[in-house]
Image 1: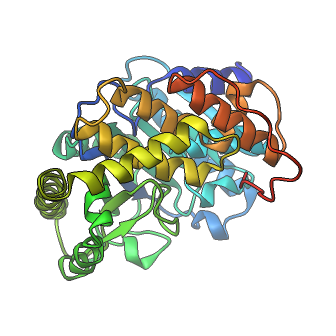
Image 2 (image 1 turned 180 degrees about the horizontal axis):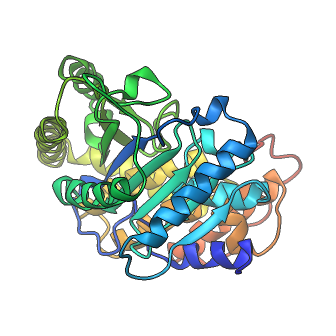
Length: 371
């Protein structure tokens, strides 16, 4: 049996599901994801279940997978023995939720040979199936996760209530148990202070906006996850169709906002993006939140053709690597908060082609970058 370290190494070698491998300039829709909540019949929900029950559900899931026709081997990762660093890496890769960082007994992460498909075992529900891929292919994501869900349920019957649909731990997930989301990069709407109007209109359509790390997280890097709020009383196709239509309209508004800035306020746009570029190229110390917000503005500048020497691919890589756990992994050893800020700034300077080392700050910096 492979060690946890070996499994994590394999997982991290796979493509990042929420970042495009071959991004193109002007790419407003970054990625899309569908998550399905399922529970095994006649067993208490994980939050009320004893560790032995959670362990049994985990074994039942693995046995069900073994009976299915799968191409390749799944990676199974027991969450309980993992350290904080390993958990943070999985969280930054968006393979686990904020709630799943609590390493309760019986929790496991299963990652398919298809790197876009994974399952959280014993989160809020027994099974959280999720399929995430770069770009805006929401219907293709639904087709793939639906096919997997149907095959799984033929081997592992899930709790289903007549008239209510799939039984879930939280009533807001009753019915389809589906949460579909589209991650969008919306810097121009944010700069023009039009984003509030856009977000306010979502509620009337049964949709909401979340931050980079999902529910309860703040907006960083002008990245907004647009997702459905309701799961009861509508079919999956209806929810997905409305989300596709709405995000397409938002993408058009963002595109128009960028065109307006380029045509009517080019000096303002260049100033905003160039200032971000300059700070990224010359800082000595930088926190991850500041880095994500500045990289978002640099990405906008690249999308608008203002920085022909900078590739979108490199900006995407930086948006991943500035996150705390990935930064420590890149360094190869643990770093204190201030050391992280210094290493992050150094990495950004080098990746942007400024290898000259600025002098260290004199005295105390007075800053304490977040972890």
